Length: 400
Ligand SMILES: *Cc1c(COP(=O)(O)O)cnc(C)c1O
Image (cartoon, rainbow, N blue to C red):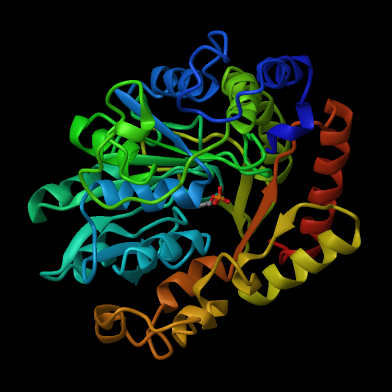
C-alpha cells in the first residue's frame, strides 16, 4: 500500500485510451468511444477477481458504502452496527441515508467483536457492517451466524483489506454486499474511486440505478430512460476507472510484494518479549498492507510509537490518538455537529456516545501500533527497517 508507488506504463496506456477518444463518462457516447468502456471493464475484472456475480464502480469508497446501504433498502431510523475502530466514512455513509450508526467494541482482531455485536441488536437493526481494518478481517463466520439468527444483512467494508481472503473466499465477497475504496492511499488506487460487489441481482440493480440519479439504464437514449426511484450521482469517471483497470490486474502482484515485506518485519519482531500480533481469524489471509502488533501497556505503546517516529521509522500509526480512525476523537459525531438539522430518527436514536463505555476497545487499540507496508521498498530497505524496529522495541519492552 499504496498502489501509486508502482504506477507505470499500464496505467498510462489505459488513460491515454480515454483521452484519445475523449469520452470521460461511463454511460453513452457509444460511437465516439471506439469500444473503450473503462468502468465496465473495471467492474468485470473486479467481479471476476472477487468471485461475485456483480460489481458496480462508483466515485469513492464512501460512495460505495452509501450506495450499498441504499441498495439494500436502508433508510431513516434503520440501525447499522459498525466498529469503534474504522475510518469516519463508516458513519458518514450511514448518516447520509438518515440511518443510525451503532458503535460496537472491537476485540483482538481489531474488528467487530461478535459478542458485542449480539448485545447491540435491537428491533431497528438492519445491517452489520464489519470493517476489515489494516489488512485483516473480522470473524466472518460468527457474524454470518448472527445475521442468520436475527435476519440481518452483512456488509463488509474491505476498503483496507482488498486482496485478503477468508476460508478461501475473497474479502468483500462473503457478506451480502462488500465495498472497496480506490482512493489515493489504498492498495489499488485510481485517484478517487470505489466499488461494491454482490451476488444479489436485486441489490446490484438498485445500486447502479441509485448511483446514477435513478436511471433505469434501459435502452440507448439516456434522456428517454425512466427513474423507478430517487437516486443520486455517485458516478466514477472513465479517467479514474482507466487507472483502476490497470491497477486491478496488479492486485495479486501488490499483495505478494506486501506479503514479503511483512514477513521480514514480522520475523524481526517475533521473538521480542512483550510483543504480540493482532489475531487473524482462523482461515483468514491478510492482504499484508499493515503489520499490527500489541505492546504490554498503553504507556509503553505510546512511548514506542514516539521513539519509532523520532528514529525515522515512518508510517507507524498509534490509532488510539488518531483524529480519523477511532471513536475517541469523533466529537463531531458524539456532539451531533451537523451543518443542518439531522433527521429526527437520528437525533432520537443515536446513543449517547459521550458517556458510552468502550473500554474493551480501548484495551486493544490503546496497545496497538500499525506499520504501513510500502510497495516501493527494496529488500535491503525492509531489512534495515526491521533491524531498527527490533532494536527500538527491544529497548522499550520490559526485560524477561
Ligand atoms: C478509505 C476508506 C473508506 C473510504 O474510502 P474513500 O474512497 O476515501 O471515500 C471507507 N472505509 C475504510 C475502512 C477506508 O479505509
